[in-house]
Length: 147
Image (tube, rainbow, N blue to C red; front, side):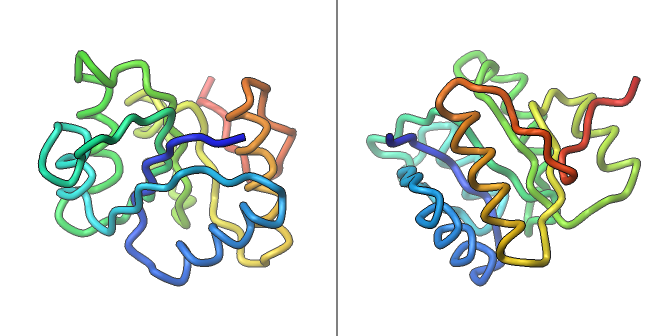
């Protein structure tokens, strides 16, 4: 099963570990990796880096250079073309204000980056199931929208 996924992540090690975790669970999405918010918007807005890009979903870190993941999410939800794009925030931030802002802006899920590779593999498995049209598995990393 293949998906086309925008991965906005500025930490090269996190990108590498994410790719390895995806391989481990048998998910091989076509990743369009960008290291800053500006490049993410360039891809989404049809700039030169977006040639031939069709996206099925986006995974955003919050703490990105140039534009934050929250600013990207706000742009996505305001975009006529991308408003319905499924978006997961995958970040190290557990700050209540970041979680609340992400859900207020319309993310589909908020996941805290696990420290252990085994836990990251569980996250990749949950993302794989979600990409296949299923629901997220009940992960402790999953943050639910505020009530």
